[in-house]
Length: 400
Ligand SMILES: *Cc1c(COP(=O)(O)O)cnc(C)c1O
Image 1: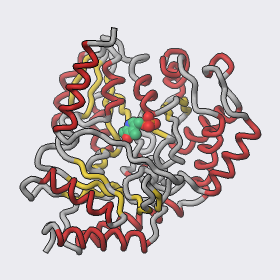
Image 2: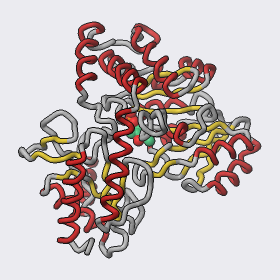
Image 3: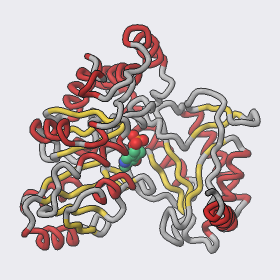
């Protein structure tokens, strides 16, 4: 009987609206790209997608996807182990494992599912999971599905990691889970220190590289390449829904026995369809492209560094870093939350699409606009963004 819950939900929704936290969907009327049109007809430069390599609407990918639709059909109507595996799924698993420098990989419908299915098959109540306090929601949920002992490690705090590793020595196995890159700050996990500590205390390392696969490191393999620890990270989870084409799908890559075990035991793999053929073939095309040339990740790095320098020169408070997520911080102003929202709204009027984040998404007093650079951006786009930031920044007295 839809009665009591309806009233409660209406009340709850009103509270969300009153608090200014209601999430609206902005409807886009064009393909994803550096320049998009939003409903209402306005054309804007897009600085808030995870389209890091500009592959979402890349002609080579669209061609590969068209061909795959003809060659492999539309859907599988089955989970993998019944009749839902084609040659391209096996090829993609091999290619992504090679790209990441791991033995093997297993596909999931999304990285959310990869993280949801990666812990439970190994981590019984005799084991321990250590997890960074700011890990992605899907890692948190994946850990919740286990009966393992849990240790929450202060964000990127190596002393706390060591303390928790010591506490967890009685467990049968230990695993430390971390995002490779944290999406609100663009912080890169210190994997060198993490691997050193985890080797010392006999602990597996699992890295979620959703915001890194395809572009971090000299050849774009991810944060393990960036931190020079390839071969020392045990498990990597990642998505095909960000830099690697941006459609959907995820995977776990790791040692042979662990991947074999996941194929027997991992519930989102066993009980849910995998990525459709078009997406599998498109993802193969992405990995082929990225293995042939580092041109796109090089351009992204150049864009990211250029934008950081131009914005710093313009007088903005940028959170330092080396990632295409560039947070413009408003913490030194009173009422930083409102300011970040108003700033983002004015930028949209200027044709620059970015998102303002404030408490409770980020800590109180750390409101920000998160800018995300892409290899699809040209220098002229970046210049236009900096010009708009400067104009609005003067208007709102954020810069002199
Ligand atoms: C985006 C993201 C995910 C989820 O990826 P999907 O493939 O979209 O489900 C998981 N972890 C992190 C760190 C992410 O940024």
